[in-house]
Length: 452
Image 1: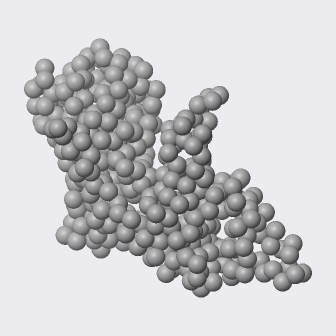
Image 2: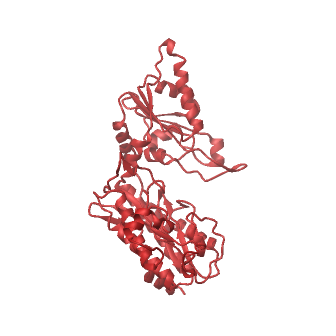
Image 3: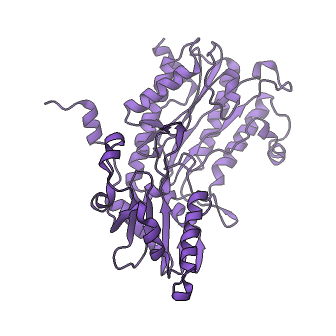
């Protein structure tokens, strides 16, 4: 029987191997103090309405260390434990529940397929986990994410304390796990980068598609629906975040997600949308003319933002620090706003006073990975973090001229432009993961004209 195209794509799909998950756990345990324990709970299902839940997504930290994607689980790392350092608590097999909701791995499956050394039903965690915590000098745990799980942790510790008279030893101290674990997540492996390249390719193709699809009179949500369809066709079932499709003045609302207005000829539409491909996010923004042709004012603002993005990209290389690209974008935008007559004064003074923030009020980018605003410190001590090969960030300058800004000529009001791409830091500079979506105004107009 001939294999379908979708089946071939699925077989070729990049994946994270069990060996890589094991290396991540080993690396984390090597960073932990002797005689310590790390506890990482999974995400829980969240009710949407009455007896339905939102689509389940595993907690990114839990997924990073295990690849296990069922709710109601707890991952425990105990370096040096004789019976196995990687312990998992998970839902037990239950044929009645599996009939309704699908297969569960169960403790046996977690050991067999996910590399756990030891696994127990999560229903037994109150009896077993205090024994693993007891006598440890340090507990690594991310306090404050889940009030419910925080209370359970303290209940287990108090259970141990209640037995001190009979020789039980409670843990000596708690340490936030986030700093160590998130530093590991910041630099991507070769396998992660394969997934992120695919997320970038699928997202870029979706942006190309809606540029060709767009017509005056359509609703914003029609473009949103087309994006979702293209994501799924590319093997990415979900967007990485709620799509922004802002036509006209809506482009000046940074996190506009109503997406319910009609697109008008003569307006720009700003589309900020990226897929999530096997848990790894893309984050792409393109701004293009609804009718296929930029007006002179729109083109001037667009070219200014593109120049700012190019200036920022030129500063991305190993050894530069995190703030270099942002500084370059600020300088380019400020100079451009002066040239357009939207700001008046000396560029250096306008930068020092922050005058540009009326039009460019956000930073040029953020880390990208398992989360769309991914983990990792931007400063180390008092210094900006130095860029290293394997880090992935967005570069997304923008200029937004408020519709009610009476200090500028009417021809500029309501123009909002952002251009965003996903960028991998390499040894020699950078790699644009979302290069498949056109950035230059003439390329956009040519692409849109082809479908007219």
